[in-house]
Amino acid sequence: MFFFGRLHMRADKRLLVLIRVFSTLLLFFFFSGIITPPIQINYTKLLINGQFVDSASGKTFPTLDPRTGEVIAQVAEGDAEDINRAVSAARKAFDEGPWPKMSAYFRKGHG
Image (cartoon, rainbow, N blue to C red):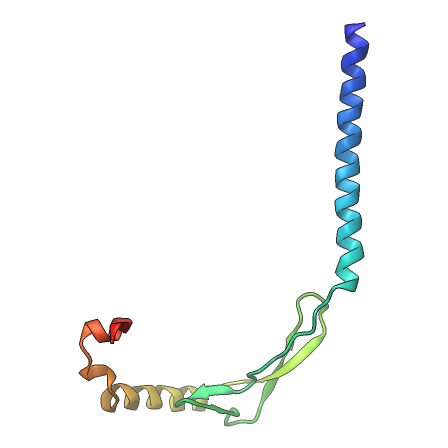
């Protein structure tokens, strides 16, 4: 009697596991196609010297939604000229801006 009771309990546990796995997969596949909130892309340009600018070459590259593989934006593609502009702007901001004159206390954000 004890032997049959254990087999019956094990079968119930297996059935519960199968039901959980199946329901999880069902929910995943059901909702993955239905719930795809829209993606809003606010910035597609390069940030150089505090301004959003196009790349010097005008090139862009596609950015894909990882959920669907669809193109969601064309983003500016920086190259050597853009890097040089960004480094030059950063150097100027460091040399002439407020940062080098600040104490470490204010740099940390306490000011």
